[in-house]
Length: 137
Image (cartoon, rainbow, N blue to C red; front, top):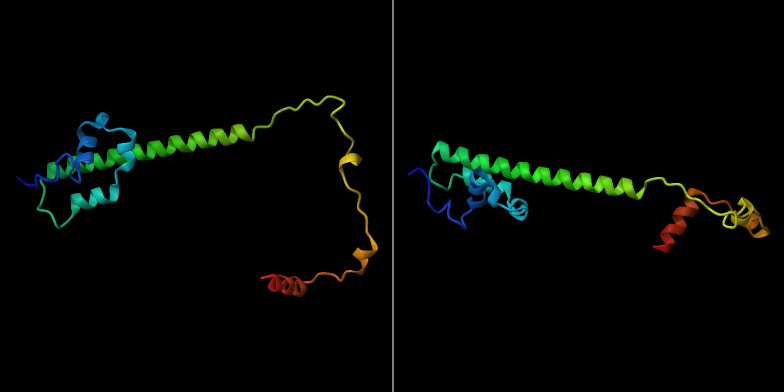
C-alpha cells in the first residue's frame, strides 16, 4: 500500500478532500468553506509521510481543485449579491413633492456674510495650521 491509512480516516486530515473528489454532494457549504486548501496540499505533498500512489495523489488533488472551485463560486455569488444590494440602495428614483413641500433656495441656503470678527482674524497659513494641530495633540 502506497499510503498511510490514517490519512483517509473520517477525521483524518484529508477526509473532506477525499469526499470532495468522490462524493462532492455529501459536503455542505460550511464544509467547503471550512476546508483549508493550503494545509490539504501540504498534507498531500508533505515529505513527512510515506509516498502515495500516483492515482491516490491525483484523486486527492482533484478533491482540492473541487474545494477551490466551490469556494470561488461561493465568493462570486456573495460579490454579485453585494453588488446588487449596492445598486438597489443607490438607485435613482423619482421623488414627487407636493407644492406645500417645495421650498425656495433662499429659504434653505445661508447668505454669505462677513462680520468684523472675520476681518480681524489673521489668515491661516500652513505654519499656523501646523502649530495649532501640534498644540491640540
